Amino acid sequence: MTPVSLIVSVLSFHAIERVIRNASSTLTAQQVHNDAIVAVTIAVVESLIAIGLWLLMAWGNKNGQGWARITATVLFGLNTLFLLLSFVRATVSASLAFSVLVWLVGLFAIVMLWRKESSEYFAAVSPRR
Image 1: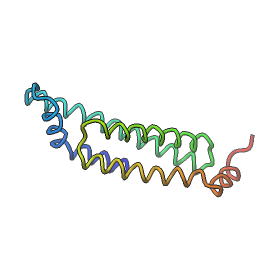
Image 2: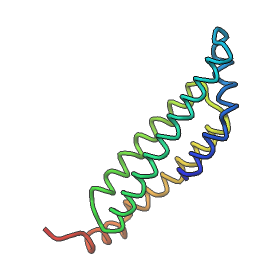
Image 3: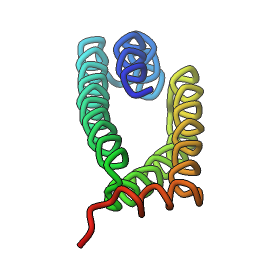
């Protein structure tokens, strides 16, 4: 889902400009444009980092690494916090709806990671110490 959010962020550029323009009437058109570029750039960098982390956690979970399951849970908690914060700040409604969809997919993944069957898998494939 994160690659999709990367694409949505880039495609939402004009909507982001509109939100910035509506939030501050004192900014010039160039300042609004520059702020939108910064916002999209930050979103792209965040998405690329998230993609890398998800791939790392997928690899770790596939190999039964306990740290990957814990890291996924912590990052899901942070994602939940950021989602809640997005309800109180100015956001593009399509972006917010997509964020909720991504959160629901993350919730499903976390529930699956902590099921009894998953714990048995982690115990079976994790490296012995």
